[in-house]
Image 1 (cartoon, rainbow, N blue to C red):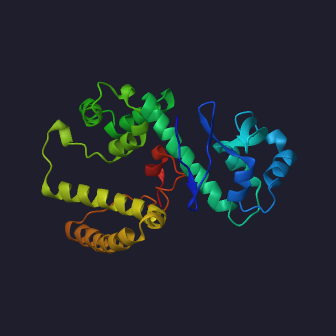
Image 2 (cartoon, rainbow, N blue to C red):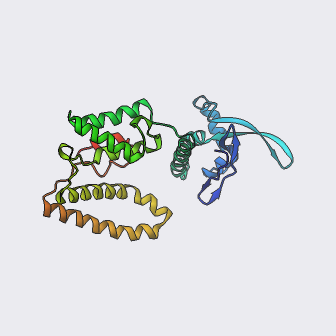
Length: 267
């Protein structure tokens, strides 16, 4: 990332670009963590120096008030480690903020470099297809064909890493057509609609508190829609005798849950 603007609690940080990565001075990091002393972060580092790598902290030369000084700076991962040791009231919030920034940085790097899925991720997709096709060649062909068409790639190994989670969701929830025909009756369509609506509702329940910090009015309005959706799903399931998968919807979309593990979380 060649340029970066970081803002925590309405305060814009003075980002130091070093080795093409953003770094924060120990002084400003201390301010963000709520320390009163300017040297507080340096004291934390001195006590735990053996836990920091060269990619987490270093000394950089800065010109301050016409004088060149050497100051200690921390990368985003270094900032997170300092915040792990901090006992200030704001430390927990700061740790979450840093991880969110790191996630965005990683995603941007994947977009910029168009990184493809690795061997482990390929194996996960293959396992899903093998499990769902149940040894049926037509089902296997259908799953891979529709997957590749959906992501506009010639083969699944060409899938971009940023689309891996979407691919897992797509393969797990795709309705396989019986014996390869293309007919989906009304009951199947309604079942698909209810299944996807329930998954979206689970995602919303998990992440709406975070979204509310960005736009509370929008979240307030959508909560009414989610309430109505819940009743609609229940009514349709009763009317058409639909039994939704017994996933652990309360936990399947938590950040700590890897995509390929979501559909194994059964109540």
